[in-house]
Length: 295
Image 1 (spheres, rainbow, N blue to C red):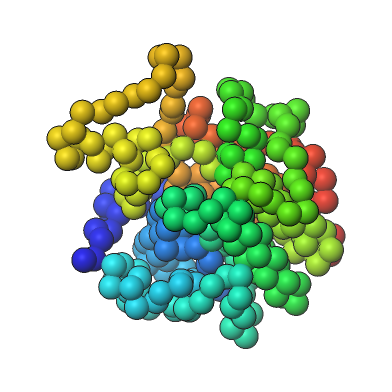
Image 2 (cartoon, rainbow, N blue to C red):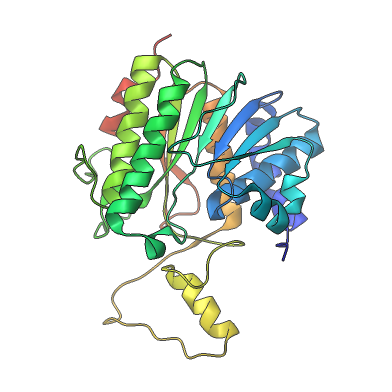
């Protein structure tokens, strides 16, 4: 069954707050890996809305493991004249011979995957997909936006504000779980940026809620919504001290807009889209020392 598009008022809100970012992408040719998940699909819809409204001339190639299934679930995206679907797995596929200007790497986010495969298998898919993508980007002059995760700080991180002194998890050559894989993928992106000479922006995403959020996976707020819809009691385990803050899709999209603006304007950095705030805060991480890329 086709899913409902994001409401026009939400898309208009994003365009209002991120218009300069979208206008800077005029005539861009974008490759999107992971555009069919919660984060990716939300960003794609906002991008297409801006493209139509402002006549930007943007075209995008969207990688999906099952093009037919995605087209059936999201015809409003698949049938847009600016979208071309490419079927394949990021860890194995070859990019089409197209002169891309921008790349969005949102593949292997946390939505659903952790419940379906082992931690090691998920980590391997994240790292392998990133390696394969970066290998092919070396031959192109592109700007990369990598959607990472707040998990890179560790699941026990309780900082209200993340600055350059906030430590990340230790990255190993072989990541053993999702958190470590995200750290390693960030380091791979930044190393490739330094060696190949393209710009990279990393967005570390925390807790969000909105359309396409799975209700039956490991997301607490999604579980609460599903319990309410099914008229089940909501059970919260704990001593009452833990707290969880979720940002709405408008915050997510506006934050993406700022990140896209950095990509479009050829500035490389790392941003944290935090669960503690309603905006994006810049984090001058030691990981960004190699950026902006030398040309």
